[in-house]
Image (tube, rainbow, N blue to C red; front, side, top):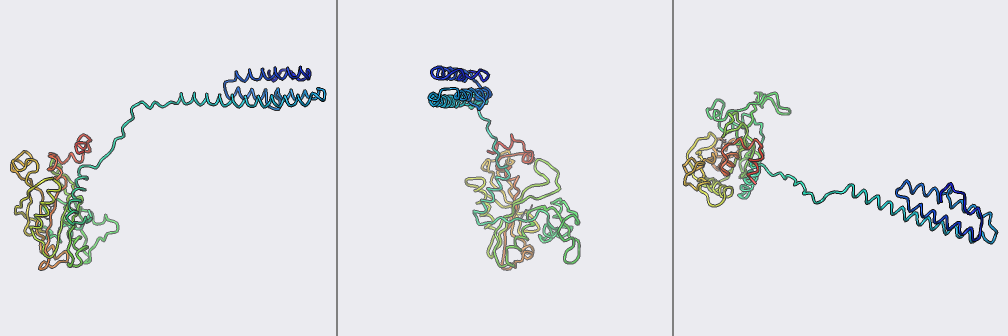
Amino acid sequence: MSAEAPPVAATGGGPSGEAALAAAQAEAEATLGAVVDAAGLERWYRAQLSASGAVSALRKGIGQLPLEARKPYGAAINALSTTLTTAFEARKAQIEAAALEARLQAERVDLTLPARRPRVGRLHPLRSTLREINAAFQSMGFAVYDSPHVETDEYNFQLLNIPPHHPARDMQDTFYVANDGLAGEAALDAEGAPVQRVLRTHTSAGQIRAMRALGANGTAPVRVILPGVCYRNEDITTRSEVQFTQIEGLMVGRDVRLSDLKGILLQFARLIFGGEQAVRMRGSYFPFTEPSVEVDLRCALCGGAGCRVCKYSGWLELLGAGLVHPTVLRNGGYDPETHRGVAFGVGLPRLVMLRHGVDDIRHFYRNDLRFLQTFR
Ligand code: PHE
């Protein structure tokens, strides 16, 4: 039955009224069955169950019925209304379920598609080796001490027994920092002389700072490593870069000897290169150590038999070291009569090159993943 059709109940009551109700119900159910979407539902509801709909129109016919027929007729209309409301709700749920199903199908995600594997980063080989080195020295009781990259000429050179114009300065081509360029740093020293600042050429500059900070005016022992970046105005070649990480080691105490240095470095070599290792010392020269030595590691790649990496000598130059010079001890606050120290400085890239047989330092800074991924 459509909304425009004349109210059926108006034509009579009694049996004919009941027939009209049955016809109205059949009509309503048939049209509801044909509804397929939300808009159709809305139209059907207006035509059948709203105040202006067919059921209301039937209800208005009550007044024309004999008194005794009104009550059952009203009850029948109420029943019809309930039946149609229930049918409407059911159809509505069906249509909504179908719409949801259609949407799920349309927006279907194909979970059988292979997932894209996330690319997981890892530490750069210089960084991961530095962490191993820090851990190796920490296992021997060394603390890590941080010192500034922008140093004064005094700390980088003078207090290390390298006065102005000393020929040892030629070994470390230095970047000088403009005196007025540093916020918050004094441009003049206590005597009113301009402070010359440099990018530290070696981590040895931190030796004085560590002794002064931790030595308690020359009374307390010190055992630290000072890892960090150093800067030299070098040509960039397979072996040198303008910027490279060094690890300084410093141990000061009442009865520290060169044999301690050898033992520490041997243990260090075992921890970093693995297995049994051997080190040897050769005489050398640094202004801040006396005696000074070069420490060689028996070639970790060929075991001393001779190979391309050790240039068939069986030994690899590992680092510079020595007993801390008495002048340097004094500058750090210690009395060289009662205290001695050992110090060493090792270049991180060189160590990683030796360990992994890398032949060009520049690989470390190019960030070529093909190179970096060989260090898994
Ligand atoms: N500072 C030296 C260099 O950079 C290495 C070194 C450190 C030597 C400590 C002796 C003692 O070459």
